[in-house]
Length: 221
Image 1 (cartoon, one colour):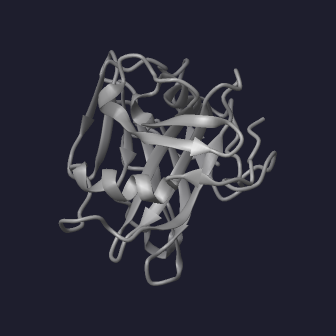
Image 2 (cartoon, rainbow, N blue to C red):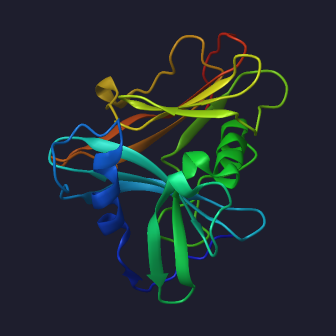
């Protein structure tokens, strides 16, 4: 179980992201550091208890973005390009924050969530499930946990595995009409969640979509 420490981070997560987001191809804001607000998200537990896993939603003046982050007590080998930055944690000391799409622990737990083997946890409260996070999986057989390529584009990040399996994370979030989240045709799994929009109301939308071997899928909750 992840423990949420009430302590200071220097720099803060939003300060790190304000410098990092404009370097991403899926960030649609203008030049210069944005003014960001925390708008939602959830956590997942690392079974080994070593890596912090957070799916954070942040907003600027006009859009919402999904930022999966992993927090480690030492650098992750081979992930220098995925480093968002380092922070000093009042309890845990120095923490290395990574774009979680490049962290195998975060990706493995996201796949466990899609399959129903992991439970989304509240972002700010220890040992509390997040009931706003919905997941589905209608594929057969185990889902992959190792992906050989991570590719950013204008709207998100695609992780690619063998046999035409892809896991797409929606980075520039789009609210579902009337809050009804429906997975795209051909999806074999998905994760959906909620966030506060820049102008105040709450919205729901897709966070991640799994496609395996081109098989079509229905939905389950």
